Length: 489
Ligand code: GLU
Image (tube, rainbow, N blue to C red; front, side, top):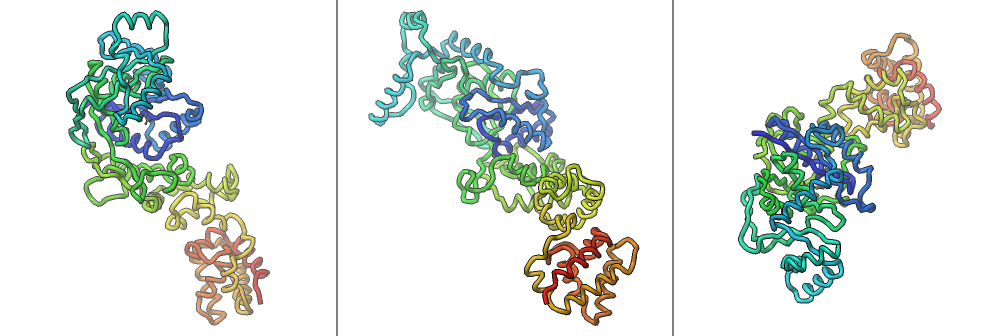
């Protein structure tokens, strides 16, 4: 099976997570079946209120970040370029002219005012909306006169007036529609720019697209495009509409539910492989209970026929959980690298970090993986290991740094930890704490808690002995000494 698939974003908004899911399916189909993944910029809507060049950068950033760099796109070019619709205007004009020559399309001279009046009348009469086809029935003489007057015109598709047309969707099965329900849609606007329907069909044809994979919300457009393929005498691609993505209340996913812009997930500290994993499960299932999968595992099981029809629910808690699972599977060196920008941004390490900071980070990663859900958890979790805490948290202080017992525990610890000059290992830290507890004749738990609050400023954290080893003897002793000032009597 030869497969050429395309992702066709419009730079009229920051790329949406549901939209990028299409790109993930495209990429998988191309890789699975040995084809090409193309990305084309659909930039024919140039309304400055919507169109913004920064959205193009965000589309590029998101694809590269996800690791699904297209085989052909405007960034690297390719045999079917240009991959930007605004640079392909002549192709749309050519197709429109060919349709007019074959009476499959016609020039419409109706003005905006006339169309508005027509719509108002239709509304008042309660009849169906849509163009009343006035210009379709112009006589040759009328047509010639209007053309000689040089009036602006749009080009409309002459939709068959009766009969039915059908297509097969890989997910939704056979779809048949009555041609009478389809409007004589505008293909070319009076400024010579194409509408979405014309541009998408012309480009998909010229770029050799075999499968149109897109969201179910585009299904209402498909009849128009199927008719256009027929009118142009071109073979249709295979249609693959992937089910809608809804919020937990089964309403269209929107900002009310949480982040929807893809770049926000990048900034929040999700891993590319977790986003990839999560997005592919919005519509596709591997056929067993497995959920956490690497890209390679997904690719091995992926099959376009495995896409279901039921709407997918975007569960933010599940995404967070899944990210934690991927964090725990991540190579520690890479995880440290991924955490670095978050720590630098929070001012916890330098940019670039010092050698010592890099060493501390490398040592901290194995201690922290169990506690992390997002990379952005790193600053709060790791800050105490890079900077001496300014003060202990109130509850910790009340519980473990209050009274003469706390003071003697601290004093004994300062002495015990500074009595030895060897590098502090976890074993050595444990042994020292045991020794202190023994000498004071108390269980070791209060000693552990006191040391934790004194050294990290908080009552929670990873295993204390390992944490002390990461900090090193010098810092531990310094912090224990300083904590003596925190003790309240
Ligand atoms: N430009 C459309 C979009 O913004 C493409 C729809 C399609 O895939 O046909 O999503």
